[in-house]
Image (tube, rainbow, N blue to C red):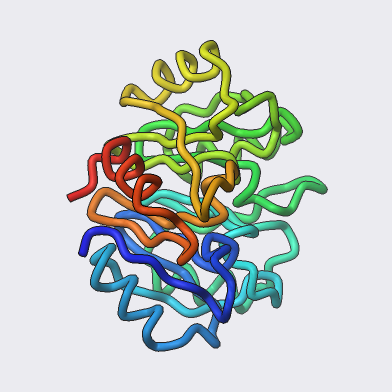
Length: 222
């Protein structure tokens, strides 16, 4: 299936633990085999096991696209080296006190929306690592743009309370269709319960049929 419901160790907040692009996925070392198989089958990417800053919260602490990966400043040298080796892309630490990179960065292969709370040094690193146009902005008036949206090269799904101006800004920045959606039975922070690329998606087990159909339409899956 292009879209599959899963739980990660009992929770439907799968995006907290998993991040994926069109080229790779990263999961904690203790990820069950059935989750890894679901990622490979639905997203058709290689899966790398790693901690980030000795944490299992891979989806919260990282963001990226097929050209690069962003991690917090306290990522261990051995973690950084291993990720560079196995992913084959540029991996950079984002400077500054904001460390939940996955919550603050919304990116695909073309563009990137970042939180207004990230500084100029962070913005420069993000732009150079992902090789994309970077712009600051909000989603639903919130600075946590990474957890409030999911972007692929086919579509962008965002928080249901996003304003019309925000949607227009996102469409101009990414150059693709943008619309609102939810996961896990009404959760507005879509990244928490959705891991997607241009091939397919994994959603939290509590995501309803209508929510899945909406995600399929917006992200042009299948």
